[in-house]
Length: 322
Ligand code: ADP
Ligand code: F6P
Image (tube, rainbow, N blue to C red; front, side, top):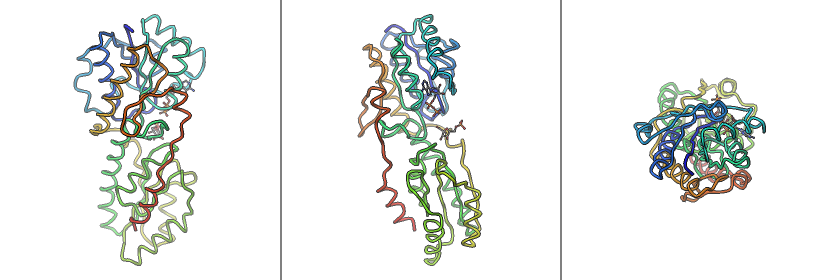
């Protein structure tokens, strides 16, 4: 391939810049022209792209967000819109694209590959909800951000003998909530993957713990847990236990910030590997980390894989955070 593109799509994640940098540098070093496509599939359809060089990606490895911007473009699921994108690729001489995003981004990458433009996917999302991949780019940074934020919340919670209910992101998955919950020593963790009963899990646990002398509590709730809203849960806890309670929805602070070492390294490895595949005219693959190794899978095979949450970790968290 002589010319390839790179884009970021869907919710941004810390480490996307490190992945872009790796793609651009590895592409240029292989003698290819690398086009940066702005705002994901939306920019691709609009032909919003520019040629990048080794220096275009200087000074970004440590920055959160994505220098190529991101967008959600639901119409990209339509065949005619994909046809338009293929025409744009042809007019710019794009022979392959590295797409950085989540499952939807990979569906778009597959569609383009089937229509003649080989694409490679790199998992970039804080949610860690890509089944073929042990750790997505952005997940580790988001976990550390949550941990840092909840440590701060703990300071004030403890000073006032309160209970803090903290809602964290993760879409329909509980990876962020479970791992951050364990790391901050939360008394209770609500995740979508586990059924719960508020009275027996939260209220009874709090009462039991109160008897041992504990007077402040952190409850972590994943946003994907159906029927639980942080503010009403805090109110309910206060009514039932008499412990003054507050709710915090962490929100988009979880998506920003300088990427962690792990995310930078992962993103660099994946970006490099994606270019090696395109160099060999291979498309329709996702580059992931599995059992500490960078591997690649067919996109559909990857999308059909199942990843389960670590229930042993959940058990440990519950047993020791009491
Ligand atoms: P997020 O979960 O943050 O929305 P995704 O990676 O799941 O990120 O989706 C990003 C983009 O991928 C969507 O906005 C859309 O442009 C594209 N996309 C989603 N689903 C499909 C699909 N079935 N076919 C083609 N493209 C899709
Ligand atoms: O997928 C990343 C994510 O941050 C989810 O955790 C969250 O549910 C969603 O995106 C928020 O999306 P938006 O940026 O559209 O508010």
